[in-house]
Amino acid sequence: MSAHKLILLDRDGVINEDSDNYIKSVDEWRPIPGSLEAIARLNRAGYRIVVITNQSGIAKGLFDLEALAAMHNKMLRLATEVGGKIDAILFCPHGPEAKCNCRKPKPGMFEQVAMRYDTSLQGVVAVGDSLRDLQAAASQGCKTFLVKTGKGMRTLADKSHELPPGTQTFDDLLAVAKLLVPEDPHRSYRQGE
Image (cartoon, rainbow, N blue to C red):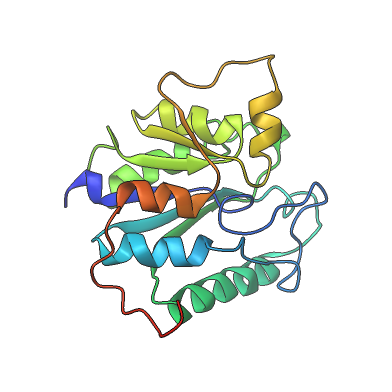
């Protein structure tokens, strides 16, 4: 499989609205306008979507694996309703104190994707809203895209660090999809769109 037909997405703040108090339930999981349509647009151009997300709320006892599964089922269902498909979801349930290799900015989940798809991630687009998303992706040679949704504006405003070299900034995931897939020939427009 061509590595360039993979796109790696953070979840909270990229696909769904984020909260400093964590997204803890299926009711709190709300898509950012246009994000699921962006996934569908990318799919129609042959891209496979992998979601890579830190979920330390599990380690903190704020929600359990069942609640996380319900959130992910909602995400998959809503994506399907607009013609999108998410190929895989990888998550780290650990808190920072666990010192695991999967919690971003560590590269563990990205390494798992490379193994799962038997490919290098060199040049693969990775989209995030926080510095740690971009650092984990950059460590594997990904092209890093920062979105201004979620914590993106805060990440941009924080001058205590530099973004990985070559990071491009976009308003949201839909803007990323429109850059990567400028023409969407398979889209059947409903009247009035």
